[in-house]
Length: 191
Image (cartoon, rainbow, N blue to C red; front, side, top):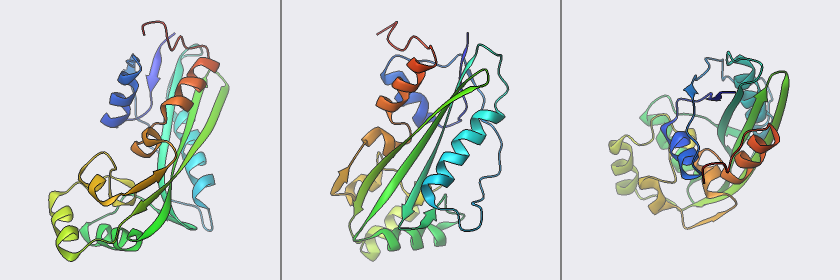
């Protein structure tokens, strides 16, 4: 049995390491992440995690873990911004409001798939022009759903969260450990 992480995210590897798990292989799948017309954030996120897990090449006894993190402002999906202008729009829209960060998980072993979503609520303060421009200049918005990462400089803009901090980062550890154990992975063997 091999444990395969279907993600190239260094944050997900770091979070797994916190509970003593090191993947045997890292195989990020290449799938189309375009939302379907009218697709809501939570089903969208769950679909992507499932499709990623299905796309990873693995043996019948291998365990594959894939995840997707989406920022939702109401019914809107705020994905990874394509440029600084889009990141600025996302951060401005999020300012002074609560939004949801959804991380969907899919664990596959053979033909069986276990799934779960972690939904957390985050409040971001309204950013001044100075804060917004300095943040954008730092480049941390690149490759981040909603244009920010809670574990980075944007943590100074977030006075309140409700839910899973590790889920907001991109891999809810309680849910991940439970799904891996359900798939037969010895989560606590080395701890």
